[in-house]
Length: 173
Image (cartoon, one colour):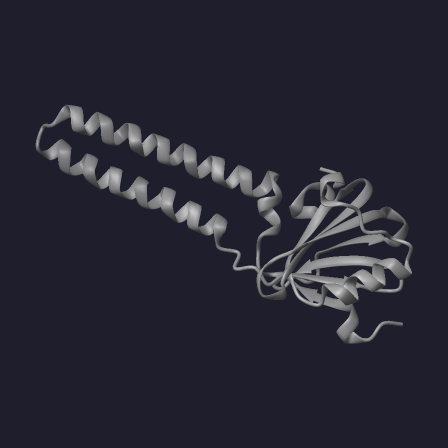
């Protein structure tokens, strides 16, 4: 059985990429709408049309950002994920809603890769042998543990279960 220190990892990323992109889009939207209202009171039709086009583009940019956050690896760049390794397998859940979690048995994991970052933090990509349903994270073939500490212990536990580290270029996408 693992001790508490060995089984728990928490993502330590800033998690602000998606929020920053959305806030930028929303700021452009608000500025273009305010500009459109001001320009309509001055009967400047050309400026009003340009600002409304910018507003529509800002709305589209917001929708694209939300889709990218859900469909790409950007979804792993959040600071509220907790990862557990147990005798049975691999779990991850959110800090807020721990009743909802993802579980994979050791036999479902085909490999992992490690990318070391700043301040001893690492990103570990865990690859599965098939597509798994991870609830709100969608159907996944891999997951990323972003900005974690103590990656050496994580690697040791993976290796004791026969899961080998693979080169980053060979990651299953």
